[in-house]
Every structure is written in structure tokens, then in C-alpha cells.
Image (cartoon, rainbow, N blue to C red; front, side):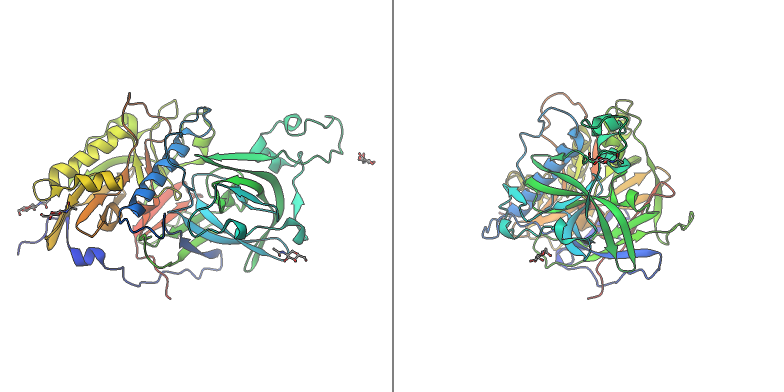
Length: 474
Ligand SMILES: *[C@@H]1O[C@H](CO)[C@@H](O)[C@H](O)[C@H]1NC(C)=O
Ligand SMILES: *[C@@H]1O[C@H](CO)[C@@H](O)[C@H](O)[C@H]1NC(C)=O
Ligand SMILES: *[C@@H]1O[C@H](CO)[C@@H](O)[C@H](O)[C@H]1NC(C)=O
Ligand SMILES: *[C@@H]1O[C@H](CO)[C@@H](O)[C@H](O)[C@H]1NC(C)=O
């Protein structure tokens, strides 16, 4: 038999279905904090037997998320046409311990936002939060009065400025400018997430890790949320994010595959506290982070922009117009990496080019499964019924500096239904209307980060990645 072409995967259907090997990856460096990171499973209707539902749900959730990231701080309700799902599904969760004595709360790891907030007080109200597997009467909440170190944030505290800007008079409207003695608290916050939102007041409290306490950590105590059943740990670039407040030098994670029906597995989130200079981690390729040139939209400053140079399908460069690959002076365009998005999003013209290349290379050998496309919300889908060995083009993202991210097949083609059909797990929006980019044109979602070791090297302003099996030792 001829050797397989290097630009494609030849894999048996059995292997496609099989689980990953159990290779452990842990760190024992004393300058790091390691936390378990667990995938939040996508289970839209546990009683529902429709095999397409999980993928459809994940596709919709990915689109809702993309709309949110792209349209943040725009006043138009631009997300009205996408279904309402919590962004938490299809994400990854960590537990953090706040307060004295420590109270443990779960948080969705989110590199696309910056505030760390949690459901708070015994009167926490979550509206439209009746998702499967969530009992709204049992959402764990933080009780500030049980913590001897919890304090309300004062409006003059510089940390209030992280959220409300540097104008003290704006933050403390009732205080006389000359008064040194203003006991007003920082204003209440309201955060919009697509169709969901959360609101509350800002607290300072101890953030506790084994062997390390971060005093006066700024955290949002939400008392009212819509469609947000869990707290969110903002790992974005804003001053209020966990990495900024802890002055982390790096953080890294390895995302175990979140097969939609799998039993929960966890992997590690590693927080690097002290400098390691410009040491590169073994086995990782690096590409520099870039900043968005626009000052119009503060949200763009919170995102981790990368410079994607090429998308390669089966050895063939997909010719993506430059305007999508680089953020322009208006801030639109470019690529971000986001832990809170499930499937990678591509602006319609980019998506069409990539999808067409897959179709071109695959349609000779497999028939399109159009019914599956309608039912799953993903496209293109192919019928692999009766095929013992499927051959698929390789998908590679090539970044500035030459770093190449070659995707494992299960990261970009997912089996759906009764395993006769595979669909491309990349999403795009409606497509009708003039091609106008708002916000990032490409959002690298967590599905395409599975089984990579991913490092955000903040000290050296670069993004590192390398293939890795992410499961921890049982
Ligand atoms: C808070 O304290 C009260 C009274 O001491 C106790 O009943 C309750 O369980 C505590 N709640 C939490 C979340 O620790
Ligand atoms: C601060 O204000 C409180 C009440 O508004 C007042 O009783 C107190 O004397 C003030 N302290 C100073 C140092 O001005
Ligand atoms: C796939 O193709 C086979 C025959 O080639 C057909 O019987 C089956 O219904 C197709 N499945 C789907 C989901 O289209
Ligand atoms: C399609 O099938 C032909 C012949 O069976 C094979 O040579 C080729 O590699 C296949 N291409 C893909 C993309 O599966």
C-alpha cells in the first residue's frame, strides 16, 4: 500500500471513535499554581434522543458567543436572531476559593472577558436559568457575610477605576471633590453576554490557593443574572482579570476533548507566578500576540489577538483576503483565541473559502449529507456510510513567525447521528447582506484547542501551543 500523503489523514472509522491515550501531563514547579480544569458538557435535552441535538446546540452556542464577542459595547441589539444559550456550555470550568474561611465556587474560564464574578448572597436570582442539569434553587452562591475578609469596594479605590474609568468624580458622584472621607461604594456593574447578563456590586476579598493568598482580590458579587447559571473567571487582558490582578507571567492549559457524551475528565490550568525570562516551553511553537490598533472599542483591548497568516486545507493554501487576517484601523478583522467559544468562528467570506476547499477535495470520494447539514447546523457534512477507511485533508493554521497548528482530525470533523456522517466543526453567521466585518473575523474556539498544550506567555507577549494528550492520571 502506498504511504499516505502527508497533507491528509487516513484513519479508520474505529480510530475516529476511539478515545485518546492516557498520557499524563503535570507540573511540579513551586512557582506555579495548578488547578483542575473540567469541560462543561453539552447536553441540551437529556431526555431527547435526537442525535443531532448536541452538535446543533454547540453550533448555536458558538454563534451566540461569536456575536457577543464581535458586537460588545455596540449599542445595537445585534444578537437578537441567535438562540439563547448560556455561554458556559461547551466551555471549561475551574473552582476558586474566595474568602475567610474559603468558600469554593465554580467559574467558567473565559479569555474573552476580564471581570471575575460569581453568583453571590443568599438572595441570588437567576432568571431564565432553567437549563438541563441545573437546579436553579441549588446554584452555589458566595455568602459575603460569612467571610471575615470580604469588603465592599469604595468608589475612590483605584480598583473601582478598572471597571468605571479613572474619573473619580464620575465614580463618586455624591462625594465632594475636596472630601477625603467618602464612604460611597463603587457603582453597581451590569455585564451583557449575548442574550444573557449579570449585575451586582464589587467586593474585595482574599483569593486562596494552596500555599498562596492574594489579598484584596477584586471580584464581582452578582445578585441578579439572566441566563448565567455559573460565575465567570475573566482571563482577558483587562486590569480586572485574574492574570492581571495576580500579575501572572504566564498561564497555560490543556483542554481534554469534550466529546459531548463523555464522562467528565479534567486537565490542568497552570498559573505561572514568577518570571521565567524568555524561556520557551519544550515542544511548543510560538507566535506573538498583537494588539488591536483601534481605540474605538475597549473590548478589543481585552482580547488575545494573534496573526493568522494562512489556512491550509490538504496542503492547499486557502486564499483569504488580507482585510480579514489583520485588524484594520477601525479595529475590525483579525483573529483572536478564545477559551469560551466552542467551535471556531469564521466570517462568512473566510468560512466559504475554507468550506469550499474541503468540498472540492472531498466531494469526489464522499457524497454530501445535506439533511445532516440542516439538522446539525454544521456544514459541509459528508456521508461515510460503508467506508472502512476515510481519507480527509489535513487542516493547518499557520501563524506569524511560522508556527503551524495542525489540527487532529477529531478537532474539525465530528461524527454525527448514527456515525454515518461527519461534519466540519467550524461555524459562520447567516451570510446574507453585505460582507461587513465587525470585531474579530476569526475566533479560534476551544474545540480547535483540544489536545493542545496552550500557553499564554504574557511576559513575552506570545502564544505557544503544541500537540499534547491532555488527560491527567486518574
Ligand atoms: C454562612 O453562615 C451561616 C451561619 O453561620 C451558615 O448557616 C451557612 O451555612 C453559611 N453559609 C456558607 C455558604 O458557608
Ligand atoms: C468622615 O465622615 C463622617 C460622617 O460623614 C464623620 O463623622 C467623620 O468625622 C469624618 N471623618 C473625617 C476624618 O473627616
Ligand atoms: C448514506 O449513504 C447510504 C448509502 O450510500 C444511505 O443508505 C444512507 O441513508 C446515507 N446516510 C445519510 C445520513 O445520508
Ligand atoms: C479519493 O479517492 C481516490 C481514489 O480512490 C484517492 O486516490 C484519493 O486520495 C481520495 N481523496 C480523498 C481526499 O479522499
